[in-house]
Image (cartoon, rainbow, N blue to C red; front, side):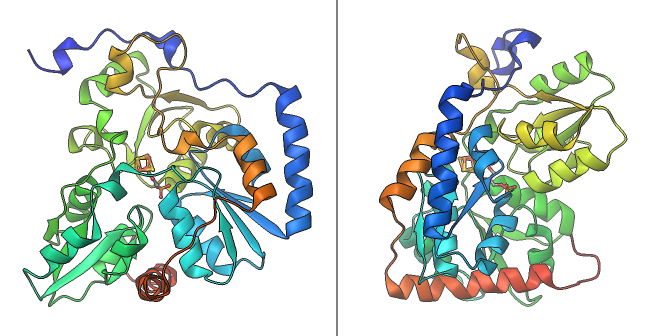
Length: 346
Ligand code: 13P
Ligand code: SF4
């Protein structure tokens, strides 16, 4: 029997997102955070997957590209990065002299874990003609070994800008890599990594949702499997998913990514409805609350931990000087290519 055949029927009542913190807990914490922000001259950057309460106290909420761009131009003395470790590291690489804190030092990423720097260096030695493009979801040590970084928001543009005489090695997300190959027609060697959360979305789940909501548009993050991407009306980074929902005339959307994104979608698209896709694993496990998909790393951050990391100025991102220096060039290259107007690039 296949995995999909074992899946229980969809219960639409379960497609709800996490309940917000009670106001009496959230409001005093938010007040403390605003006071600390002033006192420290801090900026709070939050990823689209963070819980609603964190997004609401942030100065900027966005995707990995938007967050890197914000980090590259901030005048703040302290950067509070409400996201995962590799994102805070990127902010530190762009701001070596600033203090960068993140609410939970263990907020990692399965993609980052899949690609240890020594293993990448070993593969790179097998072909001196490799041009290594690293998805930003990797460690600073991996970034230091690469030619250029990309995010899901600019991957297509970065691949199109790669030197034509080079062999592209794309790390660490094979699904994003596969999608970019489909878009650009450029062959690439793909590292075999994936996002543990996005590969849990299955074709049958989406088909079942589409049958329940025939009027809905399907928006999918490119870290998802090809079988799921093939059912999409739009495949896009988290920021572009929000823009798609804002600008589309459709009134209902099936959202195939981490459920934290629904907060901004609801805020910025009044009158529209968002259906959160359950992950296959979540559907098999009996649960008394939310069955939509959450990234366990992104959800390690809480409002209390945001307050505490500002109070203690810890956990703090520290990196060896040579890594800081070597990882900066591929990130700056990405920011430059991203800002440039290139014909036919995404
Ligand atoms: P975005 O850059 O599209 O926000 O994606 C980040 C991420 O970790 C997706 O899982
Ligand atoms: Fe990493 Fe996936 Fe979590 Fe994004 S959703 S931070 S890719 S584990």
